[in-house]
Image 1 (cartoon, one colour):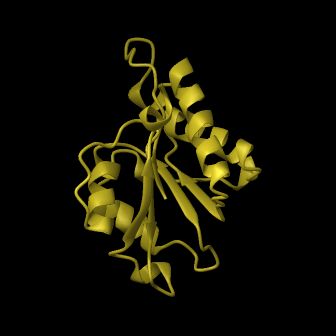
Image 2 (cartoon, rainbow, N blue to C red):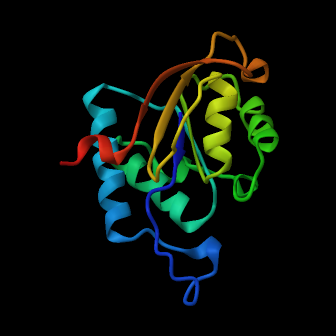
Length: 159
């Protein structure tokens, strides 16, 4: 599952881009979206997150709510400002002992990656989007094209 980080502060004067924290809407959206995962009994074996504050904070909120150990979140700073090819390399290097993996990162890469991996046209990839893809492979090294299972984002659940 590809997760774009939740909404963050846009004030670049007080923070370097890498250090921008989630704002109150972002924190609320991360909880909202995790609740949607819990409703469908979606479980995760492994979480890999960009080290950028907003992405890592999104991962931590999700992990806490699904009882995933925070210390087990793998931080990979190559996700920050990555390309689709870098992300594919990260995916291909996931240990095969994991079946259901969440990657938390940034646009535009995650938007483009969702289209590349699913062969679908995705018109938008808002903050805190969750895009689940199923791959019919025995090893992560073989991952390239898969099938979109679902895409959810906060606006779908707000009135």
